[in-house]
Length: 109
Image (cartoon, rainbow, N blue to C red; front, side):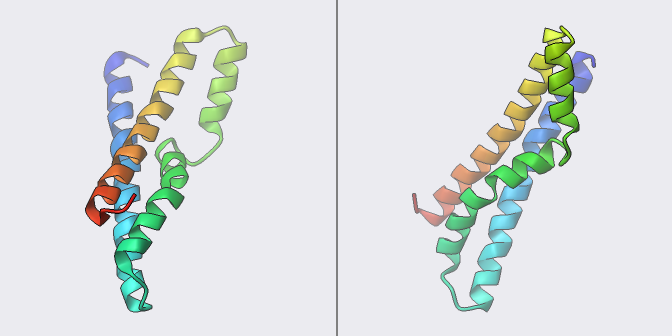
């Protein structure tokens, strides 16, 4: 994986995780209005619940990334190990950024 491909994967992971979390929280707020629950509280609550699922979806949703981590760790390829950890980190950063945005919109911490 060259740098250009790695950078595009990292940006896509960041934006996928961010989009999933923001979209899921906005839709949970709309759903809360339909069932007469407070929408901002529901959005804030789901911002924390959906974070791990946004990360999992961004990195592919399967155990391929975990398997690649294991193979590069035990196979003696530290460069690949760092690349995979950075890709997971970019997904985590995207999910956390979206969570901060939702908390900022709802003004609840």
